[in-house]
Amino acid sequence: MMDPLLSKLDVETLLTRAIAFLPNLVAAIVVAALFWLLFRLSRNPIELVLRRTGFAEPLVRLLVDNIYRFALLIFGLVMAADQLGINVGAALAGIGIAGIAVGFAAQDSLANTIAGFTIFWDKPFGVGDWVRVAGEYGSVTDITIRTTRIRTLNNTYVVIPNKKVIDEVLVNHSKHGETRVDVPIGIAYKEFIPRAREVVLEAVRGVDGVDRKPEPEIVVTQMGASSIDMEVRVWIDDASREIPVFHRVMEASKLALDAAGIEIPYHHMQLFIEKIEDRVWEKLGTVLPGPGADRAADAGGAPGA
Image 1: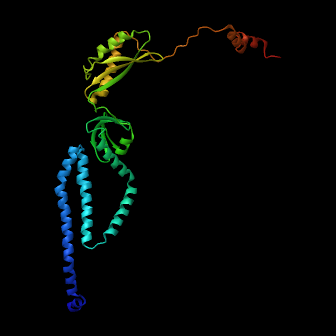
Image 2 (image 1 turned 120 degrees about the vertical axis):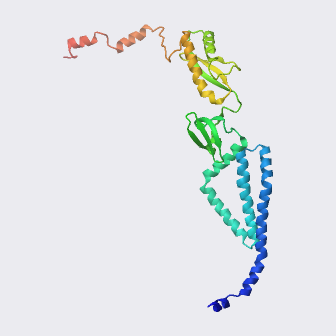
Image 3 (image 1 turned 180 degrees about the vertical axis):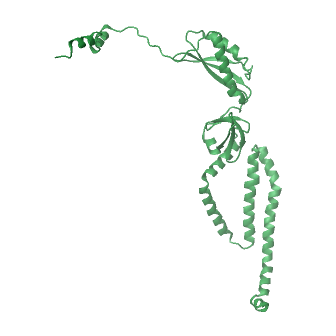
C-alpha cells in the first residue's frame, strides 16, 4: 500500500523545494520579529514625548497602544509576506477595498472618533469639570474616543456622542475656577432701589456657598413692564455649587424683601384713559341701543305690527 503512494510522491523534489523555501521563511520570521522589537523599544519614548507635549492620557494610550501598534503590525505582516513571495500588491488592494467598505458602514463611528481626537487636542473640558452641552448640565465623569459621559444633578448617567459635543455650543463652568451666579429679582416701581439693594445684599452675604471676595452686588438690568428688574450677582469657588447657591440666593432675597415690606409685584398691565371726545360718545350712542330700547320694543311689539 505504501509503495504506490511513495512512488507518486517525488520526495526529493519536495525536500529540495522545502530547503529552498526555508531561507524565505526565516527571513519572514526575522522581519516580523524586528517590527515587534521596534514597537517594544519605541513605545515608551513615544508615550513620554506625547505626554510632555500635553496630550491627554486616554489619547496617548489610543495613539500608541492601538493606532501605532496596529500600523506597525500591518506593515510588518506585509513585509513578511513579501519575503514569502506573496503578491503584496493584491493584498494591499484588497485591504484598501475592505477599508473603504468599512468606512462607509461606520461613518457615524468614524465621525465620533475624529471628534474625540479634536476634544483631546483642544481640551475644552476635562474630567471633573461642570459643563452644559446638548441640553445637559452636569459633571464630566469620563471622556472616551467616541463619547463623553456626564453625571447630572439628578445623578443620572448621560452618554453624549463626541460629534454632538463639538457641533454644539459648550459652556464650561469650571474652566477658570471662580464662577459668578446671576439671580434675577424684581421690585415695584414705587420702591426705593438703594433700600432694596441694601436689604438683599445683607441677606445674601450670609448664604452658604457665597464667596466674600469678590463682594456680592446688585445691579438694575431694565425697567420692565410691571417691575424694576434687578440682578443679584454672587461668586462661588466651586462650580458644583452653582445650582444650589442660585436657589438659596433667590429664597434669601425673597424673604429679605418680604421682611422689609418691599413689594415684589405680579406681572400686570394698567390702562389709563385720560380723555374721550364727545363725538366718540355720540358715535357709540348710534351704534349701541340705550337702556330703554329693549323695553320700548317689548311694549310696541315688532315694527310694522
